[in-house]
Structures are given as C-alpha cells and as structure tokens.
Image 1 (cartoon, rainbow over the protein chains, first blue to last red):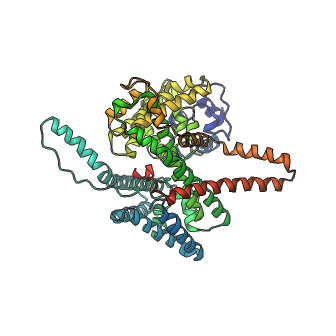
Image 2 (image 1 turned 180 degrees about the vertical axis):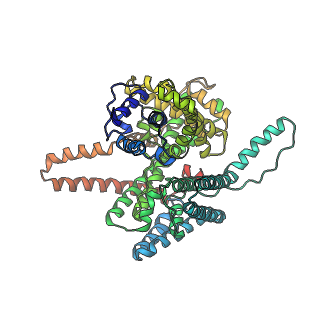
Image 3 (image 1 turned 135 degrees about the vertical axis):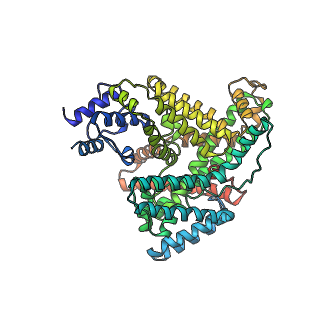
Amino acid sequence: MTTIEKLNAIFCQVFDDDSIQIENETTANDIDGWDSLSHVNLIVAVETQFGIKFSQKELVSFKNVGDLLKRIESKIS
Amino acid sequence: MDFGSQNFLFFFLPIIYFVYCAIGIKMRSIVLLLASLYFYASGDSRSILIFLDVLILNYLFGLLLDRCDDPAKRARGVAIVIAANLAILFIFKYLGFFCGTLNSALQSISLRPVGIQQFPIPLGLSFITFQAIAYLVDIYREDIRAERNFFKFSLAFAMFSKITAGPIVRMHQIEEQIAQPVVTLDDFVGGAKRIIIGLGKKLIIADTIAKVADQIFSIPSFELTTPVAWLGIICYTLQLYFDFSGYTDMAIGIGRLFGYRLPENFDYPYTAKSLTEFWRRWHLSLSTWFRDYLYIPLSYALMTDKIRQKISEGTYKTNYRALLSIVVVFTLCGLWHGSNWNFVIWGMLHGIILALESWKLGKIMKKWWAPFSHLYLLSVIMISWVFFRIPELGRALYFIKALTGFGHAGFTSDQLRSYVTIELLLVLGIATIASIPIAKGAKHLLKIIISRFFSEESTQLQFIGMAEAFMLAAVFVASMQSVMGTASKPFIYAQF
C-alpha cells in the first residue's frame, strides 16, 4: 500500500465516506465535513496510523493533501 | 479622530498622504509611524504610554525568543509573555467585570466587597493584544523571525488605518510592505474606491438604520410588540454588518492608499447557510486567530493516548473533547468582545450551535432546502444579536419573548407606522441588496445591455467605468452630506 493509498483510507474513515478519492491538490473545500473540528481528528488519525508526530507549526500549515503527504513522507523516511 | 469625521477626511488623511508620497521610500515608515502615534494619541491620549509599553514588551521578548535555542526555555518564555499580554488586557478590560462578579458573590455570603479601581480601556487594546500573541506564537513556531527594527515593528502594530478595530494583521502579512512601502496609481484608485464604499456603508446605511434600531432597543420591555421587535432586530443586524464592514472597507482602503494590503475581514456573512459557514465569512481575522492560536492547539492538547488510539481505530466517531473546545473557544470569543455576561452568553450560544452543527446537525442540514437553511442561519444570528446588543440579561430575554410572540404588548402593528418611513424602507432595501454579492452580476448585466448598443469592447469598458464612477460619486456626495452635517456615530467595534 502506497502512502497516498494509506492516507486515502484514513480520510475515508475520518470523514465516514468510502467514496473519497484524494489527490495532491485536494483541499478542505473539496471534502465534505473537513473543518477545524475534523481536522484535529484527521491529524491525530494520521499521527497514530503512521506512527509520527506533527509540530505545533505543522498542525495549521497544511494547505492541501499534497502538503500533508510531503510532511508524512519526510517523517517516515 | 473617527474615519468619518471632517478632521480625519479633510485634514489628517490628505496631509499625511501628501507628505508620505512626497518623501523618499526610506522615510515613509517613520512618517507613517509618527502619524499613527498622533492618530492614537488624538483618540486616546491617556493610553499612549500603555500602548508604547506593550510595544516595547513584545519587541524585546520577540527578539529574545528568536535568539533562544533551548526548546524548554522557548516554551516557558512564550507562555510568560503571552500571560503578560493577557494580564495587561485583563487589568484594563476585565478587572471591573471580575471584581463586580466577585463582589456580588461576596455580598451573597455577607462578606465585605472588594474596592475596584476601574481604568479606561486603551484604544484598540483587544486587537493589539491578539496581534502580539500571534506575533510571539509565530516566532515560537518558527514561522517568522523577530523584527529587529523597532520602528518597523511598531508600525506593524500601530498603523492608524487598523489600530482602532483591526483587521488583526499577522506579521508575515505586512512585513514585506513595511520594508518596501511603494505607492502606485492603482493602489491610489483602488484605495480611494474602497474608502468611498466604506463611507457609504457606514454613513448612509449603518447610521440611518441605527437611529431606528436605537429607538426600538430603548422601548420599555412591556411596550414592545412583536412586529416592532422584529423591525428592531432586522435593523440592528444590518446596522452591525454595515458599521463593521464599512469600517473595515475604510481600513483596507486607507491601507491600500499607502501601499499596504491588509487582509479581508468579511465575505458576505449573511448569505451563509449555517453558523459554521457564517464564521468563515464574518470577522475573518478574528475567527482564524481563534482557530490557529486557540482552538487547534487546545483540542489537539486534549487528545490523550487513549483517545488517539480510538480515533485511529475509528471507534471514536464523535470527538467530544473537540466539541467542548468549540464551546470554550467561542465563549472566550464572546468575552473578547466585552467584559459583560451578555457577550459571554452570546459567545457560548454560538459555541453550542457550532458544536451541534459539527456533531449531527450539519449532516441533517445538508438535506435541507437552501432557502430554509438561510432562514435557519438568519434566525440564529438575529436572536443571538439580541444578547450582543442588550447588556442586561432580563431585558434581552424579554426582547426574545417579544420576537417569538410571547411579549405583553402582543402582535399589534400600530406602533410600526411611527418607525417605518420611506427613507428607512429605501435604506433597508439597499442594505439587503448590498448584503449579497450582487456587484459582479450587475456588472455582467450592464455589459450585456451596453453590448447591444456598442460592439467595440473598449467602448463597453469605458461605459462600465463611467457607470461605476457615477455610482461612487453619488455615494461620495451623499456621504459628504453626513460628514458635513451631524457627527457620525462612533464605530461599534471600536469599543471592543
């Protein structure tokens, strides 16, 4: 399973929608229910499932899925 | 000095602007800083020293924080300076409220009340404190470096166009413009247009509607009929938006004149279909501040290992701690607006409804018919504005009773006639239309009409430009009549 596939599965689980197909350019506007509240759920789920930890700065810095993916990859490599 | 006053529009602004443009780029920041300090002192001469103290405190600690490499010391340092900023805000804004509440508690158990020394709140302190916290946290998160030049640092906080009531600017949004204060003809034209729009919103719309809103909100509770209460809250809803967004248009427009691009604060909030969407459109610089510096760090900190595990397994579908954080954050957002219980109730009410929307209501609302969602949002907003407008809880609840038809005075619409004039209906009509993003559509329609008469695009554009100039001139002339006449009402958000 590639990183984006694993991330996609987390998105589907957090937003309770199996039809979600994320891409690098996907932003909060494209996904139903991705607001400040679910953002925390998403980040925590990503952290636990990838076994990584984001800094305070990173928490609010992701502009799109590509950004998030880059950070995850740099942390797991 | 108010943006809508003769002194500001005919003396201060043109003189400073002339000097600013005439001198070299290197001196511009200093001129703008001195002008801003003069503007501040003319509005609140007693507080200028407090304002300077706050600036020096944050300037020095910003530098110290930037130099320190030890993560533990950095965390401690940033916490101490944030606490110092909040302590200053507390002393000036909340001490009276706190002692008042404490005294009522003490009296109820027959103890002697505490003596209170009530200080006047310095101009713009709530906005300055929030900007300072954002500055310090951004340095702590290594998003920005501390500004070394004290004049440039001070200008980022003191700039007169935003000192009274925001927008709350973050350092990275303004530092480049302070370093390179270039003025272009485009900026001048864009800025002047925006100032005229802001003047029109404030002087023609907000101040006219305010007269009726003020009258209705001063009616004794038992005389308030349902139709009059609705007229009152509709007027206040529109007054608040046009007052604050008019002020913001002027702040952004004045900034633009001087070559600064201040962040937008509004995006047609009353067109929202949920309270969640409303807060993505209303007072953006404040709502994003609460999101980035309070809500996300707070709710993230509340995620214990046990909850993290549940979230990752998908067994923690409703994040109760994050929902609670929303209520806490919005209650504090209410308190930020003023040191009184009515603002706390207003904030908490918004927090609870936002939490409900995030929990289950939001999903149900998606199935609603769009006009019904609008109606829901407008009802929530208008009813909650009652707490925003009336400081006394009993009177506010009575006003809501009258709105829902349970007031003593009943439904009779006889009294309505004494408030509804042609002028009011006209202004309410304009205000309603101006609350929706109609300008683009109107421009497009105008283009279609003009294209029937003229085939060349350059001629079409000329006509549209002329129509726009004519409209702005009309707004300007009407606003000037107000400026020359009675003194305009102070901006509502300047008191926060």
